[in-house]
Structure formats: structure tokens, C-alpha cells
Image 1 (cartoon, one colour):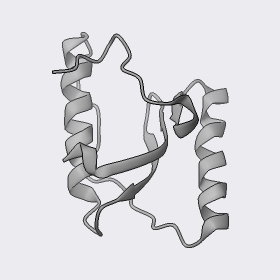
Image 2 (image 1 turned 30 degrees about the horizontal axis):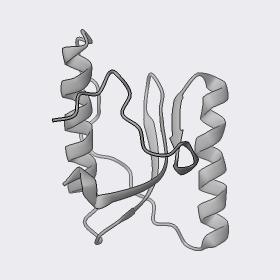
Image 3 (image 1 turned 90 degrees about the vertical axis):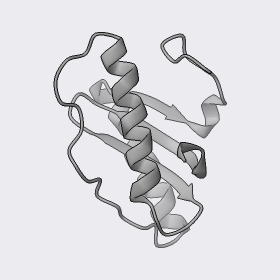
Image 4 (image 1 turned 45 degrees about the vertical axis):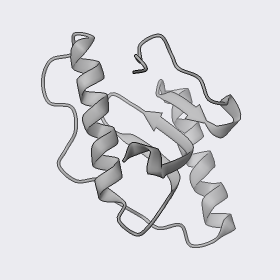
Length: 101
């Protein structure tokens, strides 16, 4: 299910995350929930304890190209605050913390 998100930009901070992506249909929360669940398992296997995410993600549809560009730059600016950032410009790679099966 997580593969149904065509991700353009993703940042993760200590408190929240932002995702800019294209989804196969209007059902955004199920694939985002699956991605959050997978991240929880990976982080807990790495030693993180406690609750990680809130129950529901806030979903804001992109209105037009200008809005998309603004959201992309908003997400990228979080890196200056210490967020982990990935964008489509980084290509596809598998960090050593993620185990492919």
C-alpha cells in the first residue's frame, strides 16, 4: 500500500512530518497510515520507545502548480531546523537503517 504514494518531498522532525506526494486516488489516509506504521516498526527496532505518531494525518489537497511549489519549498526549509529531508532530487536509495525484504 505504501508504494501507492508517488513522493516528491518528505521531511521528518522530532514532532511531526510533512509529505508532498501524488496518491492513486482520493483515499489518502490509508497509505499514509501504512507508511507511518512501517516507520514505527523500523524506529522501534532501532531502540526508540514510546508513542510516535498521532492518530490522523491532516490532509491538504494541492490546488495548483504555484501551491505545489510553495509546499515543496516549505517542506525543504525544515532541514534548516534539523529535520531529516528527502526530495525527488535525491533519487531512490535505501539507507542502511532500512532493511529491504
